[in-house]
Length: 273
Length: 139
Image 1 (spheres, each protein chain N blue to C red):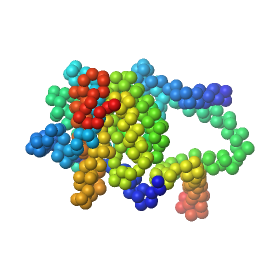
Image 2: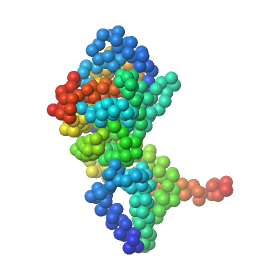
Image 3: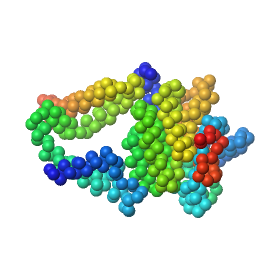
Image 4: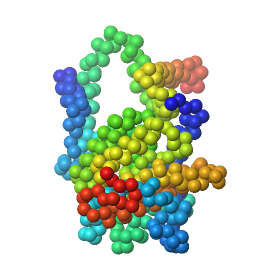
């Protein structure tokens, strides 16, 4: 499928500018707001609410559970774009927000967040670097946003899936829990066959390795469609996407911790088959 | 040169068969033993030195047989900062083109070829500016 240069630039710029999060809501505001909505899922804010089926697939998180049981700090390695750790005026960064929310929703816990950028590398190149980062940080949990670079670079989907599968298996062999987050969504990518193939292959790898997967693309698509008739500013939608991604990741971690045993459980969302 | 050739051969074997050590299985200090691009471990430094040793013996032969090849590529090295800056921008542009156009071998070949031409031109332009009479007068 050929795209006009205008569409390409818009898609490319929107993907690149999506790396500019700004967090505005405090945990206390979220708690009061969600309680007042009467929704089933208290850890999600009203503006980030997405039906469970479009949100994540769950799987057990034995390493995090063990760290919590032993009452020791849980080390988390968040992998993503460099701008995710940028500080905004009066706002918290994505890693800081993750740490705050996890500790708020798991009283008595201590989460130590480390953020490392995987700047512009495809999966094959990033794999060695990620192993090095893991060796340096020695995390209990890796939260890994994958696929955006591969979408832009039009990487072969099979190569991507193979490299991702190898790296996830390596992490699991070393008893490190993993939460995957699929790539950034923009309206212009909704019908792109390469994007959809990559997202599908990511879901297959997560399913095969029984690791939780946050359906960021589906969630942001849902949130975008809910707001499409309000003429939303695309930059505001990108910011919302990042803010909600953190909420969705926290929710996926919390629910996955509660999953029994090593057998992939049928979570609230799409089951791990 | 034999040491260089052996070092290059070992590097090829390690790369092709993915024999890099598991970073979590090596003793402390771990970064001393790994071979990823983020760190200049002794293994990577040794490999680089053997590449230099091997190449310094081979380069005069190539320069004699194909000066049209060695002159522009040597210029790239002499003007590495400018070449790197332009290559970063060109790489981004090429990514956008590959995103827009159904990719094929011909497209990739065209992009890479034009990219190399652009970088050689960049190196030539920087050196031309240095040599130009205006630059000489200002100096």
